[in-house]
Image 1 (cartoon, helix red, strand yellow):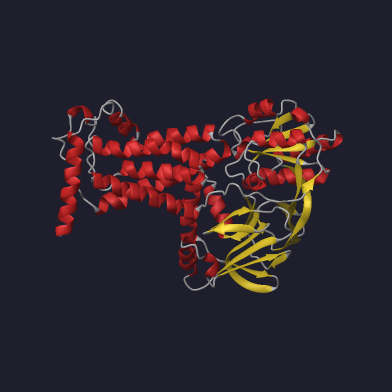
Image 2 (spheres, rainbow, N blue to C red):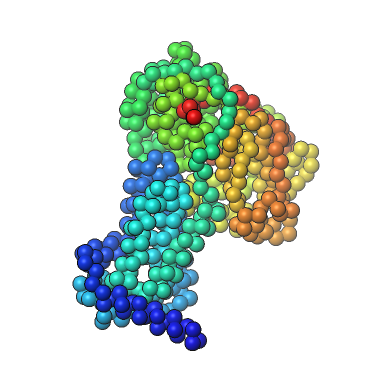
Length: 497
C-alpha cells in the first residue's frame, strides 16, 4: 500500500510539473493533434497515405497498423477502462489554452488514445521499419498531448503505450509480417525481353483489389507503355470480358506474337493466369495487385515497376506449380502456386472475405481466426490410405518457414516438394492448438504433424467439404491427389545481385 501511494504521489507530481511548464510552440499544435486522434481519425488518414505512397509493403504496413489499433482500442476501452475506474485529472493547474474542447468523461486509466497511437506505429514498424520510424514522433506527440492537455496522468499514458505494443505483438503472432531480404532461388529460364512492354498482354482484375491503392492501368502506361491492357468484368461493372476468357485470349495472342502474358491481381487471379500461361506455353509476368500478393512477394516482385524492369530485360526464372487431380468425381486438374488446404483454413478465408478489401489483412485474419476457432468442426478423411479426423490439412507448393499459426515465406519456388501439415483432432484440440500456436510452439504439439512430400492422396471426404487454394474457396472432390509440376512455369523476376 505504501508503495502504491508513493507511485500515485509521483504520478500526480509529474502531472503538476508538466502542467506548470511552458512549452513554446506546443500550445497551437498538441491540443489539435490530440483532437485529430479522436476515434482513430488521424491513424485512418495516415494508413491511407502509407498505403498510397508505400507500395505493396506500405499497404501491408497500413493494414497491420489498423489491425493492431483495432485490438488495442477494443481492449483499452472495454476491459481496461472497465476494470480501472480512475477519475480524470483536475484541470485547475492546466492553462485554459491547453484544454480540450470536449473533456473526456470515461475512466482515465489506461489512455485509449495512447494505446491506439502505440499500436498503430508499432504495427506499421513491424512491417516497414522506415514508415514506423517516420510515425514514431507523431505517436509520441499524441501520447504526450494527453498529459499536456490534462486528459490523463502520466501513468495512464505509460499503460496505454504498453497495451498498444502488446496488441501489435499479438497481431504479429497471429499474422506474421512478410520477411524482406530473403528471396527464392529458382533456376533461371529463357524469356523474351519486351522493351516498353511490346508483346506483353496484361489482364487486370479490379475485383481482387488491384485498384484499391492507385490505378494499375496508369502505372502500366508509365512503366510499360506499349503493353496491351484489358480489365476484367467485376460485380461493380463490366470490363472487357470475364476473367477466364480474357486470360485465355491474352495468352493465345502472346503465343502468336512471341510475347508474354501479364496479370495484375491477387493470388487467385495469378493462379488462373498461370493455368492460361501453361496451356499456351508463354511466360508469365506477375504485377502485384491484391491484398496479400504472397506469390509475387516470394518471387521477389514488390511492385509493378519491378515487374516492368524484369519484362524489359527478359529476366525470368522457372518455378514449380502445385496440382490437384480429382479422382471422385473425375475432372480437370486445378493448379496452385502457393497453398492448398482443407478444414478450418477455407472457413477462415471465407469469413475474412466478408470484410471490405482494406480490412482483409491482419485485422480480418484475427477476427476470422477467433470466430473459426469457436465454431469449426474437424473433418474425417483418408490421407495416404489412413483414416484421420483433422482440423486442418495444409499443402504448400514448396517448403515454408512459419511463425506461430501461419506459413510466412518460401526461400525456393522450385524445390520439388509439397510442404504438408496436418492438425489432428483430439481432446481439447481446439484450445491446445490455439494456445501452442500463439506461444510459437505449434511444431511441438502431438496434435500436429509436418513433412515434405512429393505426392499425397486424399479420399473419403464428406460431400460438401470445401477446399481453398491460393485464396479461392470452392467445393472439394471426395477423392483427389496432390503433386507438383516441377519447374513448369516461366515467370519474370528482376535480376538480383
